[in-house]
Structure formats: structure tokens, C-alpha cells
Image (cartoon, rainbow, N blue to C red):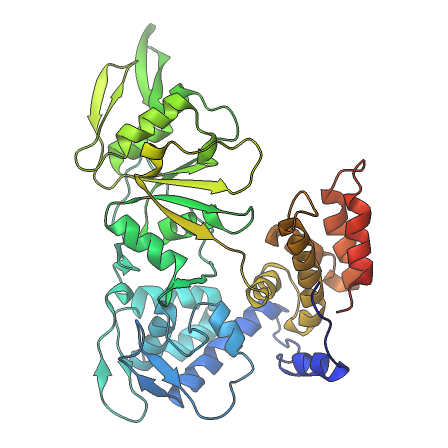
Length: 435
């Protein structure tokens, strides 16, 4: 169980650290908060000392206490907890410095659109050390045509589709100051295929869809927890009628399209893949000039050099199989953990139409969810409370519809079957929560 605040003053301090209620005519508190964060981040950087040799993109250091929105800047991926600049932070600051109309653009555009404009126009710029005329070279992954070292593709074959709607992603450190996206991108850049594993709800699939969207790569995604026919993967013949005549035409399957045109094939629950599919992927992930035969068509294709296989799997999941050793050895494995509490609170606030002044209420539904998740990790519950469930709980807070504990009960209790004793255990945990 999470410890409750040690005193009333702790909650008061948390509320005091938040922005005042939104007064924007649109009523969009989230947009106003983002605009405020952008301006505050720029002002903070101007007043800070820049150390270009520290970290991948340099580090900012300021005298005195951290400003209240610092935690949100970290969650937005602009800066690290120790002041290290992230790629988006570099782009934002350099755009503001070098573009005469950055402030006008921010006033003109929705702040989310402004950040997209920043990525297009500011990423090739440089950072100026505060108080000097010295210019620092932008790091390689801050250029307009790369993202974390991966080349952004200028064109995408018509046969492939780039995922959309995954612009926002909250990274987490892995080791040596690198995040999971840094490690994934580096592995993919060097021709490796991936095995992403972790508890359900840790963002495995979302991470690769975000990465693919950033570098403009077409993706095919298949969930192998359900039966998947080989014809769906490789392809099949279809009968067409034309001018009174019928003819057979070949239609590539989702895997074939990726292998042929250089897309990324995302296999969710890939530890449930059948033996024949495993053998197929064994051939497709061969180092060097991999070739795959399509028996029904009688065609042998050379796998495109940009093809990548990314498998995801939940650990300790019923029905999963042990990966074939030869197949597993071809994949770079990366374990995903849950986000920390601060990041989850920030995501929920962004996903739900709530003012940041409701942070205390949001924090409570998140803390309750995390307590229940810990119970799952300890073996006391059969499934975890995921970030999606926390977002659903927070939706019941809108317009004062429910208080935090009632919202948590509504979103969390019904995830567990009636006949089990887990529902009463969940209800007790919520009732006794002291946050």
C-alpha cells in the first residue's frame, strides 16, 4: 500500500505547485497548460547555464529551487530529471532562439500543432549557451531527417501504412542514461529484430508504433493470441471478374508485404506463434540476404534490407510458449517496466479533460490503481490495473461526477469476475486507501 500524505500541508503543497485554473476562452485547460509549460521552459533555459559536454544533448543547470512545472517538462520528454536536454527540448529551444516568429506561431497555433511545427522547423538548429555567443552543434538524432539515429523515410510504399495517433510517448530510463526508445532505435538501426517483453499494460506495442510513426515506417500488426492463418501472413489468390472473364490474382499477406517492401512486422503475443510460423520467421530474420519461399505462389523472395520483426509478449501469461532457442537468439530482448507514478499521473491528466487543479484527485485514483497492481505482482490478484483503467477511472471525475474512491470502484472492481473473492479484496483496498 502507498503511504498517505504525512500531513495536510503535503497535499496543500502539491496543490500550490500547480497552475491556476485555466482562463482561456476555449476552456481547454490542457492546451493552456501546455502553452504555459512551453513558455516557462523557454524562460527557464534562458536563465540557466548550458553544459554542452554533459549527456547526449547537453545539460541545463539553474540556481535555486526547481520551478513547479519541471516535473511536467520531464514527463513531456523535454528534459531529464537531472537537467539533461532531450531531443524535443533541444528542438524547442533552438527554434525559439533562431525563429523570429516562434512566439507568434505559439499564439496562432494550438500548442500541440506548435510542437509539430517545432519538429519540422527547429530540429536542425543549435543551442546557445546562456550569456555567450557560443553555438553548440546539434546532436545527430536532432536533425530533421532522423529520429534517435533512425532515418526518417521520405516515402512509403502504397502497400504499407504508417501508424498514426501515437505522437505522445513517455520514455523511461533503461541504463547508461538511455531510454527504451534509444535502445530500440539503436538495435533496429543495426539490423536487429526485437523481442519486447513485460507485464501487460507497460507500453510494449505503443513504443514501436510511436517509433514507426516518428520515422515514417509502414507497419503491419498481428495478435497471435488468436488463430492466425498462414494465408493471412503470406498471401492468397483471389478470383476477379473483368469484361466477362474471370482471373486469379495474387494478394500479398501482411508479412509478405513487410518483407517485400521493407516494413516493420509487429507480432503481439509472439510467444504463442505456432511451429510453422516460427520456422517462417526463422528464415525471415536470417542475417544477411534472407530469403523466404511462398509455397502457394511458388515464389522465393529476397527479404528487403529494411524489414524488421518486432515481437511483443507478456511475461507470466497463461497460454504462452517457451520461445524456440534458435528463433529467440535472432532477437534483441528488452524488458519493459511500468511507468513511475508521476508519469502515470501526467498521462491521465493529458488524456482526460480535467484541469491540472484536479491533480490531487487524479493522483488518488492512480495510487489506488498502483496498490492493486502491486497486489497483482505479489500474486494476490489475477490481473493488474493498467494505465488504461486509470484513465477510465479519471473520466468519472469529470464535472464532479464521482469522488476518487467511487471512481476507482467503478473502473477497477468490475475487472474481476463475480464468483471470485477478488472483488471484495479490491473493494477493501479502495475503502482503506488513506491518500
